[in-house]
Image 1 (tube, helix red, strand yellow):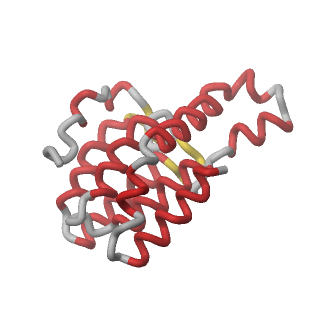
Image 2 (cartoon, one colour):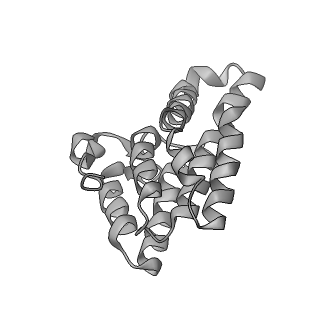
Length: 157
């Protein structure tokens, strides 16, 4: 595999938003997940989760742009929190907070159509890289295989 996260600079992070405001910190967090020790990586992933999939179901504008990098990190054996990354990808794939609410209260679309679009883009981003699951399902780590199996089931729906 090529140098991890080499395409981070192609995303205009400062021009898009996460739950904290500017998504400018996302590259630093992804680097911390990629190269940090276990405690550092988990803390960075926790912060990243809050920024792109708050509460495990509320996605943000920056979520879809972040997903390809999460897939990339999930493939790297040296990343210490791969199982948690796959769980985050599953949460993103399951996210339908705004879409579900808008289906019950259509007038909300007038005010929150961006959020519905962000959910759809984020789900598409997770689906776009699903071929990585074949690789993850052959890993020796049973917890990683279980997480990948759950994600595969979600994506098959």
